[in-house]
Image (cartoon, rainbow, N blue to C red; front, side, top):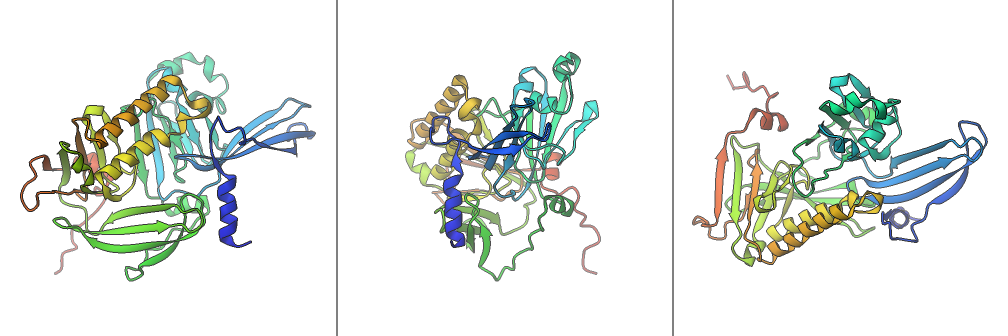
Length: 405
């Protein structure tokens, strides 16, 4: 069997998680109980959860000593960046937030000097309270801890962990999500080698499909966007599963000022406007109280309609807490209503504003009146805050003394 055929089989084995799929049954195998050393049974379910890619859920039970154990393990690829979740735990409801924690993630509560180091627990799909219960006996009875406002931090260099936003699609003011570049120490712990920078003269390089992990080719092209700047478009097509994706990187440096673009949608033809969203750009729709943080969709060169469809797909169709036991009627109804509003925006049936806020200044929205000003579009330049410079890695840059003598 060829590599491509093997990957096709892999794509057929790992199906999207669906509580209504009667064919999606776990595989049961006999295995040794590590508690009493009698034979028990392990149930394995191979599935795919959006945001967490392919996973293997295993559940062991022993009929002799009644010992049980449940684990979750990522079966997909390690993400391009690590991820850091910081949650202000203020209420009992926050303890019930669902969490996807990979085995490479560390968990910390600074106020309690509490930490679960990476690789000391198996991956799990649980709640914050359930996650802590695995390491702290009697946390449920420790009411003072539950009443104190604390920070709950998950740091996962593999990028495969997730904390639920119960207010989706609205912004979660208590939750901060930061993506970062792994250090050599992170790569060593994950057993991977840092990717070498590609030579600009090579228009094609080998990679793996983000969906089925089959070998694929990524094409690179330098494109000049009219009235803007040069950008690098990287397009990946998978011959195995047919998945297609494109990512955009700025061809220039970070601008001196950030850029905020506000467009008032007045006609369905606005949906055909070209749009460049860099990986540092946030998207806001004030009328829906919606904000999409930077790096959520990566860099994209698309149309306004394409961006809105991607947002709907991310928030509604690919929300891991919209299916199975994680789903609630109230949450599903709220997200379904959000999806309907996005459809109305695309059809030109809602009066809204779209805001692209890019502290790096590398995002763009087409002015259909160019070179004249667009009466429905406002472009603002602003000075970045210290926190924004920190997110962009600019505060640590030292440029003094590099001038030519």
